[in-house]
Amino acid sequence: MRLGVKIISFKAVVLVLLVTVGIINGCSKKTVVFEKFEVKSGTNVAHWLSQSDRRGVEREQFFTKKDVERIASMGFDHIRLPIDEEQMWDDNGNRYEPAFQLMENSINWCAENNLKVIVDLHILRSHHFNAKEKPLWTDPAEQEKFFDLWRDLSKSLKKFPNSLVAYELMNEAVADDHESWNSLLARAFTAIRELERERTIVIGSNSWQSVETFDALRVPANDKNILLSFHFYKPFLLTHYAAEWTSLKAYKGPAHYPGVILTQQEFETLPEDIKVEVEKWVDVEFSKEILLEMWQKPINKAKALGLPLYCGEFGIISNAPKKETLLWYEDMIKLFEETDIGYANWNYKSDNFGLIYPDGTENKPLISVVVKK
Image (cartoon, rainbow, N blue to C red; front, top):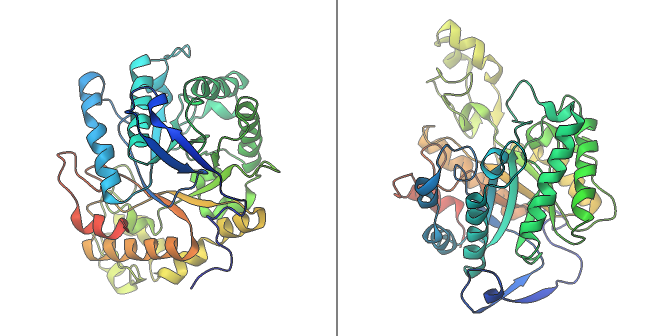
């Protein structure tokens, strides 16, 4: 079924910019045509400038121009590029220039390969989405520091065309109340708009950019250069099957999709300590239609505001049941296509969720589903 309004499409006349890539440092001289910033299918370049201890040569070699060429050859049209404060700046807010150079290199490589880039400020020292203490919400100095990080990023990135690079304010905000995020978002949005009037800014709702909280998101008014973003890892029993960093780490039982994910009969056979962690999944059903119903809050918000919608993260951990994994991915990709929602899978290179493994070998069954040429 196709929803009545194309959510990812811009109603305004498409602006075509002829960009001579040679004016961007490091690019070869050739003419590339970019439209107004719009993304359909992409992948997250995780564990490079974010959530990684790699530095020096090891970091340089983890993600290179060849990886960008590989992503382009797969048929994607963009990458989402997570960056962490602790990789990009020291405790005093001074740049780590090698990290900035890697970021800019990757954007130049993308320009050469007709890929767009969403630069995602993923983790702050004052805010990790799974941390118990998040000073960002209580310390005005940390809030101002957050704005300053974006002011500094703008100094580096504003030379890139608006059609090539977008800014994602922060990954998976987790505030105690929705209004704390809405207020901080508005101030960060204003800080960028004072420097760049037409840059596309990507924003999501409080509580891990979840679909459930999207109706509480307060979107800056009268600005069409906004991309609304949600993340989707449902059902968690399947997407994070036996994930070591979760309460499911000891679970080795069934996780069905589509249909009832865990039957009462299957539940009764489990050890008592495991039952406590998975009881809420008993006799709960999931299907393509149910997933779409779960997306209605972001879909309705995007429709009401006339803004494009994007799923910046989705995926299933690599050790989950293979048959169910591929069926879930197939339904997800079909839903993105039917609703005109852009997407980026989590992620490109990883032994947990990757399209390719750290040694460079491909997860071919997954790639064949996620990539639609």
